[in-house]
Amino acid sequence: MKNWLDINAFMGIPALDWVYAVVATLLGFIVLVYLLRFVIDRAHALARRTRSQHAEMMVDVLRGTSKTTLFVAAVIIGAKILPLTDRWDDRLDHLWFLVVGFQIALWINRGVVIWTARRLAMTGDVIHNPVITTMTAWTLRALLWSILLLAVLANMGVNITAFVASLGVGGVAVALAVQSILSDLFASLAIGLDKPFELGDFVVFNDIAGSIEHIGLKTTRIRSLSGEQVVCSNTELLKNTLHNYKRMNERRILFTFGVSYDARPEQLRQVPDMIRQAVEAAGDTRFDRAHFKGFGTQDLTHEVVYYVTDPSYNLYMDVQQKVNLDIMEGLERLGLAFALPVRNVHVVRQPRGDAARGEGQTAAQRPLSTTPAQFARRGT
Image (tube, rainbow, N blue to C red):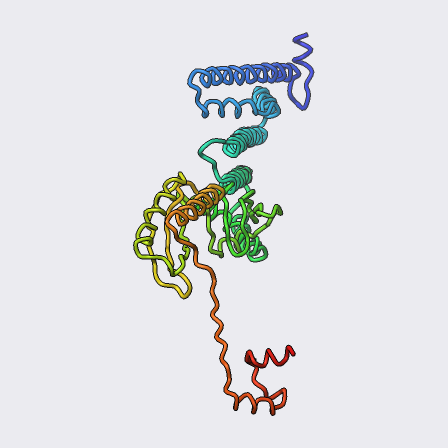
């Protein structure tokens, strides 16, 4: 059998060498598979012992190793046994570089995907902005495959200098063509870095008020108070002055009310203390001041300032309602009343001579005012 293998040849190589190459390929593939499994088991044991997220990520990355690349690597190992010419040896070296580079790129790509998924799935006090996470992942993956492509071309003897220059010129042309899209893209990057708002924040700008529901690469979606979804361009959103109410630590409240002019000074002196007691009794409040501000046209004006220590709008309305009711009860105890709108009407009676001349005028020439006497004559 050995003599027959030595005598027969395929492609100028003895059949015995082909047998050795096939055996080396199979053994190499088995060794690589078991070596990979050994490394994964050791990394998994390390991850369970240390409870490290990096170790768990390394295990997930290694589990994504392509069996195809392992088989191609085993084939290259077996082919090295064959008595090939220098030309084929060079090609195998290029193929070996391609396989190793491709597998490393697959590992890095899988690592980026796992990192992105875990970062976006994080819950708790720290919520990462999905825009900056997504853009970082896209940038890393695009950079990874670009470097791999250029490295493969350079390894194959291709001059990549002109290729890189042409990519630069093409990039400028594409940037000019999609200027508006790139504007929104960089605006989303600014949102991710500066973080003027995050998911769940309640914002108000122009005539739009609602909660941030989604921050995308081009648009931001807001769920308005009336229920519909408002889609805003990131560029236009950053151009407006935006009020972020979720980041309020407390809410400052200022309101005024008026007391009628029949109040006595000793009664007015008790009003600020009564207001203080009403504000402090409401709970979740911090009293600032209450003053008899001035003399209005129809009332004695009082101004009150206090803080609600929780930014919730519903809580503020509950507190304000309780304060208003307590102020009404306090004014009633003090014998005071709220000022009501008053309008004074002065009726002027014309002299008899002027009234007689007015009767001789036409309807268009008569004055608009009407005297009580004229009312009486019209009623008869």
